[in-house]
Image 1 (cartoon, rainbow, N blue to C red):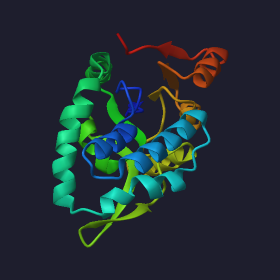
Image 2 (tube, helix red, strand yellow):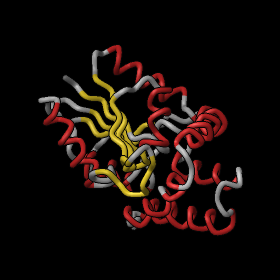
Image 3 (tube, rainbow, N blue to C red):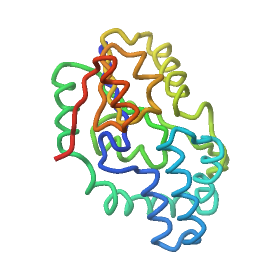
Image 4 (tube, one colour):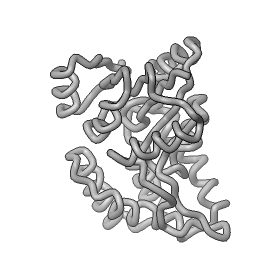
Length: 218
C-alpha cells in the first residue's frame, strides 16, 4: 500500500488546534485566563523554536481534561470544532487528500496534538488513520498522563513504525506533508517529503535537499 501522511496543525489547518483549544478554554472561562494563556503562548513559542519539552507541555495541556467529566468535555469539544476548527480547514488541503484517495493511497494524519482534540478533526477531513499523542484514560476519566510514546519529533517515527509493523507494510513510495522542522525526523524517512507552507528552518532544509515545497493557503 502507498501511504499519504499529513501533519495537521499549520499544514491541513490554517492554525494550530492545540493552541486554539487552549484559547477556547480561556475564552469560555474554563481555565484561569491570565496564567493559562501566558503558559499556552510560552509552550507554543517553544514548539516553533524546536525547544519544546513535550512531557512538560503535556502535563500542562492535559490537566484540564482531568478536571471535568468526559461528557462535559465532549460538549465543549463539539463547540470548539464548530467555532474554531471548521473556519480554518484549508480547502486546498481537502483537495490534496482527495487526490491521494483517488490514486488509491491510504491517507493518515500524524500529529503531536492529543487525540482528544484531533480525532474529530481527522473524521471531518475523512481520514480515519490517526496517529496522535494519546491521553491516558482510567475508569472513564482522563488521568493527565500519556499512554505510550508522545507523537512528537522522533516519537512520530516510533509511532509510525509500530503502525507499519502492525499492518505489515512499509514506507515504500510514501508521502509526508508538513510545515514544521519538528517533523524532519519523519520527513527524512519517506519517499516523497513535501514542505507545506514551511517554517524558515524546514524551507531551508527542503531547498537544500530538493524537496517539493508547496502552499495550501490562498
